[in-house]
Every structure is written in C-alpha cells, then in structure tokens.
Length: 282
Length: 305
Image (cartoon, rainbow over all chains, first blue to last red; front, side):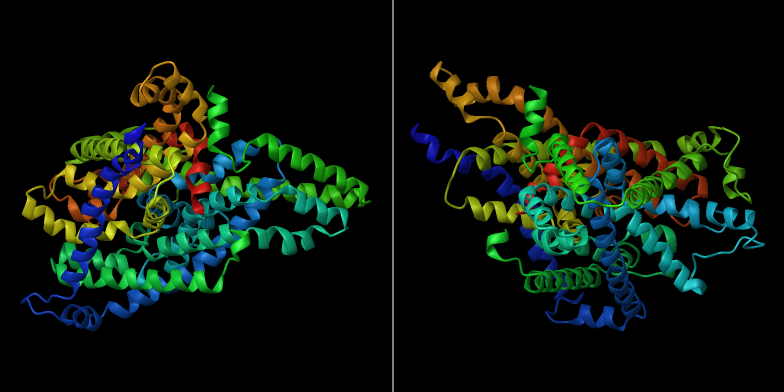
C-alpha cells in the first residue's frame, strides 16, 4: 500500500498538534510571563519580588526538605513491598491491588483522609486519649507545632505516593530474567547476597525512573499541604497558587513556576548522571 | 480472547503464573539448602505480619474517612471520636444541599468526560502508529511522550489562564479539559500502543487478504480485541481529570470542579463538607481503578524505557 508511508504521520499528527498547542506554547508563554514585569519591562523583576517575599525561603525549604525526606523513605518501602510481592503466590493479585489503591486517590482526598485522623478532634487524638497518653485534644497541625505538621505531611505523602514507586518497581522486577537469581542460588548465594548483587543492580533502570517521577511529583506537592497545614506550611506550589489566585500577580506566579521547573530539571539531571544506567542494562 | 489480550499488555511477565512458578522453584531450592525449619516458620510469620500491616496501613485511613462521612456533623466536630458512630446520612445530606456542590460535581464529571474523549480520540491513533509502523522520527515522538509524563503539567494552567481569557474560554470546563488532556494524553498513547502491539498483525493481514481495506480491518478485527484495553485507558484519563487539583483551582472560578470547590472554600466551609467531599472524590476513583487494575502495570511498567 503506497500511502502507508505517510499513514503513521497522519496518525500521530493530531496528538502532536494538541501537545504543541497546550504544552509547548504555554511552556514558552510561562517564561515570557516570568521575565516580563507588570509594567512591561523584560527582566528579573518578578523574581526579585518573590525572592523578597517573606514566604519565599520557608516555601523553598519546606518543599526541598519534604522531597528529601519523603522520596528515600518511599523508595525503601516500595522496594520492600515489591520484594514481598515477588514471594507471594496466593492472594498476590488482591494484595497488589490494595497496595496500589492510593494511586487512584487524589492528593486532595489524601489530605482530607489524613486531616480526619490528625486534626485536633481527630482519630489519632481520640486514640491517644483513650490509652491515656494525652488528657486533652492537642492541636498538631499548626505553625506552633511546625515539626508535627511537617511529620503529618510526610506521613500523608508516604501513604499516598508510595504506590506509584511500587508499580514501577514491580513491573521492573518482572523484567529480570529469573535465571540470574537461580544461578545465584546454585552457587550458594544467600538471599541478601542475591538481593544486593543481582536483584537491585538489575532493577537500577526502574529505580531510576521511579526516583525521577516521584521526585518531580514531590516537588509539586500542593493539596495535601493545603489541607493539613493551610498557610501554616508554605510550599512552592501553594505560593504559586496564592500569587496567581489570591494576589492576582500572574508574573510572580509564573516566576515560581519557572523556579519549580528549574529545580525539576536540575534534579532529573542529577539522577541521570549519578544513577548512571549502563547501556547493556537498559 | 479476554485473557489473551491481558497477557499481551503485560509482557513484563507480570502474569501471576510466571511469578508463581518462580516462587515454586525458589522454595524447592530453599529446602535443599538445609535451612533450619524453625527459622523458616519465624520468617513466614514475620512476612505475613509485614504484609498485613501494610494492607492495614492503606485501608484503615480510607475506612476512617468513610466512618467520618457517615457520622453526624456533631460527631465530626465532637470529642472524643468513637469507632462506632450513629450511622447517619446527615453529613452526606448536608453536603448534597450545600451551596455549589451539585454544580461542582457536574463540572467535575463533565471535565473528566471531555478529558477522556480528547485523550482517546487523539491518543489511540498515535498508539496504533507506534505499534504497527517503524518510521523516521518515531523514537523522538516516543521520547516526547514519555518525558512529558514527568513534566509539571498543572503549572501550564498559569499562562493558559491568560490565553483562555483572550480566546474567550476562560472559566470554562472545556478549557480545563484541554489542560487535563495534556496530562492524560501521554498515558493514552503508551497504553494503547502496548495494547495494539499485543494483537498479532497477522490477524489484520488476513483481513486485508479477504478484501478489507486498512480501516475496515482495523474496525472489524483489531478494535473488538482492543476495546477492553481502550476502555481502561479511557477510565484512567477520567480518573486523572477527576483527581486533578491545581489546574482546576486556577482555571475554574464560577464553574468550578469539585476539587477546585474544596480547595477554594477551604477556610470557610465547615468540616463535614470536607469529609463528605473527600468521600465523593475517593469512591468513584476506587471503583474505576478496580475495574482497570490489571492494566495499571502496563501503564507504568513497560513505558519506562
């Protein structure tokens, strides 16, 4: 069929045009907005504005700290869960389904779920008072208890975001030929030796993509923090939202957006460089 | 037919059969490696305890949210909480009649349906092209699609808010659906492409030999086989839009979706609205994900490399 040569291009053209219009164009536009001040001058005015705002450093610090704490914990937890999954036979599918449930839960809903548990009159305090650890309902989720609030967000984020890492790792483990592990057993390697010398190195490509994806999502943390901390715990995304929605300063919001993208690019580059996956393992 | 198509989307040997045989062989080898029996038992119990704790870790918080939404508003704000509330639909009823909830729910549904349609109509042909053809530029296209999954798409709502005002679709569900579709489209392309790859090209060729043209062969042979998987990716697109918060809260003001409603009225709405709203957000997503659970791995797995 002669027209076949062009057919694939006709088939991908609609999606390319759509992504061009709603991805590429706004992507360029966001830089234009960030580097144009409200009086029309090109420059860094928007960046100095957000930099001088008192919430800038706290939001940057909170976001990076949250990412730095949450992502490694999620990776370790997900590796453990994935290893458990590979050793299951009966009930494997149901347990895997339950463990991936949070994947379908919106970050907003996850925030609400943990609010029900951790708020002042919530289930955690009720439990603590029932076992006489506390006398009166304590309020954890405010700026006076910055550490408790941070911990609450960490717990909610781990609850919500580990599933995606798990799914990527479980499908990555499925790609490792089982002959390697069997060979290790034949040569008398213990379970831990096989884990460190065979499974984890073979899993490196999956670990890399899970880390990249999960880190970028962690940098975008928004609704969970809004629900649990409100304005008591600023993060980059909530600042972006406030500048755009509350203060109606689109230039400053765009500057935050550019900052988030910049951090994302730097961290992705870091992962690609330092978790270098050898060509033959891809 | 159904089982063959599901095997096809999961070539990453995720089929439970493969893993069961792996477990068999490893347990046989473990026995030959003379391990003390008692130690084995202890490990097995530890393993079960770990699995159970992690199952509870996922399920209990959801159960507590459900518990809250079938409590009365007095119990929600009351102290201390009990695990046995007076079963009441007062909270859900209050939520239902709260100003703006019904229209927010309708808007969320509408945005999700638009997103679903855009993602499938644009994504499935591209998925077919990736599965059936080898063409210059194919790898570049694939890379764009894979990388865009990691891009913070919701941020693009910021410039789009301005552009939509100029075009005249500001504060509209259609405009929001466009942003959600940029989130969902990459997934639709990747899922459908792995789906079409799993359908033998010989079936199509046989149809051509019998006088079908390309489109007829696709419609009569490939489409019926791919339908369940295409439905699954449509459902996934729906869930992406249904759950999205940031772009919704930026782009919809009067015509807001449920997530935008909950975020924007965070400070003024009473606690019961949050919990009932949380429940309404969670339940459809859970049902839908249950329906497409076996496709989850093809979405995130294969497409990684």
